[in-house]
Image (tube, rainbow, N blue to C red; front, side, top):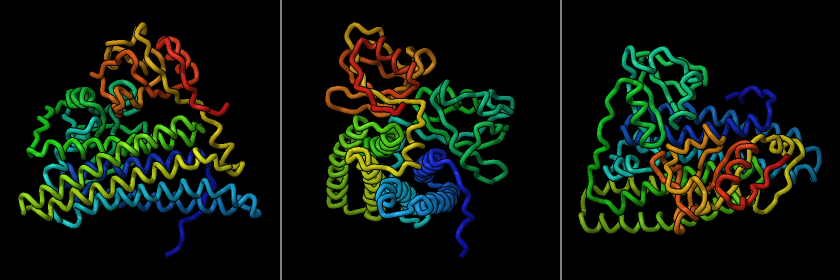
Length: 397
């Protein structure tokens, strides 16, 4: 096979596309499990080919930039990021393969995906609905209701990724993700009733462990890339804490699965799918840790890459909510921080626990430690209104 044609690109653009593609692959792999869809599993593998091209491009860029041993040392960091992105991509492909292998998906996996903080749903657009003949750019679903359209099925063909100006049409089938309140709204806009998220098993403890693992691995990756883009050791340390929490849930999930297998002595193949999923989610979290390792160890980057990473117009900070803040005891939906302040909440740390990608119904409490991302002006405004000292993310000028 001939290697893909090399086309010079912006490093920041390339890194962003790698992150977005690997994130999309993971979400679609989960959707494939939830709906036991071989079509969505095939779509994941199509995106895997795209990731191979992105990996090829960034490795060529690294090779071109290295003119001597000193510069080669500075490129190891960016190659470590590339390897981590590839690991996430491979894990997503492995998750999708659980469908292709037809080993049977244990119902507790579907229950866990339904119970996760961030929901994944498949819906169809009704003719004449609020989504019919509207563009994603005009709808502004992520900023208005926190919902992302990950894939569109039109004329029996799934398409992903989706352009920001793509137009939605009646009879389109969508895979979307977002918080529960956003899912209710998107179903109303599509003119499609939202079915109940029925829990099929009584394995409450295992279900909770798997759903938390899914949420923790997702936010670990998101924060890992953010720490790299913004040069933030504080955010990198948050990823390390999240990985520790993931490992605790992972240990318990393996132990509980083995106990269930020993006790029930049936559905062993389906229970094996639980262990396989846990293993692949661990690979995703380990990849996130590999990314923040660059930031924590302060690996010097080649000037070509360092300049690109310094061009961020956003930053991340941690804020402790004061008891006197106007945010206390108000839901995120009511606060509408993205619309009124210019920041969005990534994580809330409360009583030593992480609330990952909190939904609109979550209330902020006094002494919550909130990790937010936004513009410089938005961050400063949020700090002032939270009446707390912000631990700056270390974002570059």
